[in-house]
Length: 130
Image (cartoon, rainbow, N blue to C red; front, side, top):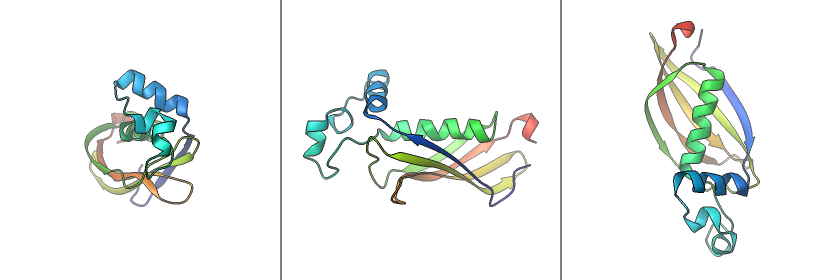
């Protein structure tokens, strides 16, 4: 049974190859994600992850820690860039449990403590979680 305050974490190291593959699959080949020479001239100084790649990893973390949960709503923002080579912590915190629905605080936290993604999602629990 999920309880308010419960935290789940998963770690993942993102590589330039991850960015390139996500760009190939999504069609989002913005040079800030896939061109190190271009990205070196930006305020980031290097390539950074697609926001939707980080969001996808959080979706996988939800499935890992709350099997069968189905996302109903989500809100998110991307306060900082997440560069290739960093190990991020995908963090889920149970904010509320309302019957079969759970509100989660979600974040992708960089090694320096900055959030590359932060937000909330509401999930519907699978029958086995109820």
